[in-house]
Amino acid sequence: MGKSLVKAFKWISNKFNENPLTKNNKLSAYYRYIKFNTEQIFFNEERVYPFLSHTKFYAKKGLSGIVPNIYFGLHEVEEMGFLLHYLIPSDIFLDIGANVGAYTILASGEKNCKSIAIEPIPETFNYLKKNIELNKLDQKVTLHNVGLSYKNDRLFFSNNKDSMNHVVPIKSNNSIEIEVFTANDLIKEPINYMKIDVEGFEKFVLDGASIILENKTLNILQIELNTFGQKYKTNDNDIHQLILSYGFSPYKYDPFNRKIEVLKSYRKDQYNTLYIRDLELAKNRIKNADKIKIRNFRF
Image 1: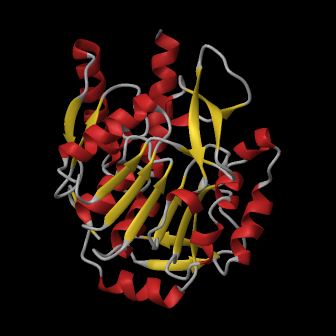
Image 2: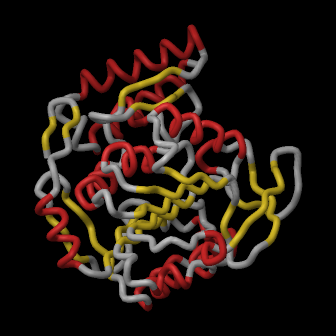
């Protein structure tokens, strides 16, 4: 037990050093970390925690897709910062692999745009639905408890890996059969910003989303490329080339200075890459965006 605690503190300390929102104020971050985990030891139940100005969420130990926002403020500060600077109320945000809804809450709860959130795992979907109801976003968010692929089918998904649940080849005690669709068939609205986080299944989701990708209303694609696709015999570079073929280019974003930097390839220093089709549109949106207000930060 002692070794696991030391390992956990070492891991979170490294994360606090990496995140710009906590690296210069680690004491308060440690306080939130210890407070949350202590509460979970004694109560072991979901509780409501504040997010940004207008939003909140349910969290409990084990929900790794949302809990880190308690410690950091914004867990993925670059990507979440970009989303908050870019989106406007008339946009439609497509969240593929929404988990319990961190990005969807920010998009619809903070930026007041419509969202379509897709999460295949029933237990995770139930938390997503509760978070949408908690923030009174039922009229802004459309929820789909299905998976996405390159064809309409039924696939097995793991159901015991929290935010890392994924498609598995065979049925087991730790899997569940779920209906999957192509994005082309499921989504008929013109999407402005699409996020994909599907634990290695990205290529198959993209193959079923050609109509969305071809539509010039889609200007932002945020996608996780982390070599997990190897288990499905797909390659991150092939996915990168496919995205380029639709007119997108890869970028990184500094939310504190609102600077967009072009990249030669997808991100290998972190999991998510931002792809932008119309750079000038993105720059104009970001320049005119309201400041993000979180704890002592305004950017």
